[in-house]
Image (cartoon, rainbow, N blue to C red):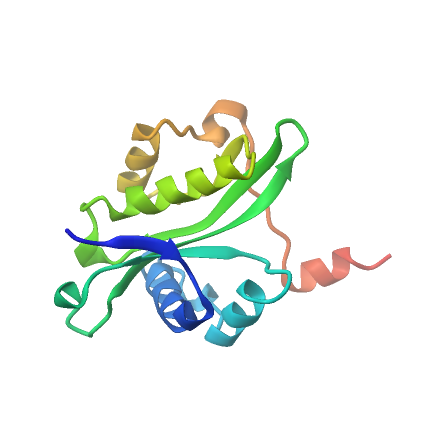
Length: 169
């Protein structure tokens, strides 16, 4: 399969928003995906972006029946580990179903790892749903490990009213 991986640009936000919705549907949490194309444009392509992205693209002759040539993406941002120093966090890794199993997801993840190493990062962090066995198996085959199993850490979140309440002095 002929495809290319490149840095995302503001013109990609419409397709990234589409694929975020597809990923949310796949993960059975479509009602949680609220980010809009405009949010992506503002948050990823401003002077101080909150995230960065890469796009997987196929030539026109391989476009989907809906006409899409942008068929995968990864969103990432830089973070910091108080134990290890610089880190990179991969927020999303997605490839449209009809293009899976062709090395595109591996290429996207590899590019995020390359970007992290080039920035002096010592670890790549991400989450995966416990029921997503094919993704879990893939990540394990790449040398990744489950920090919940190995170290006992759980990923925690505070949002909405709880976040507002927590922010009160």
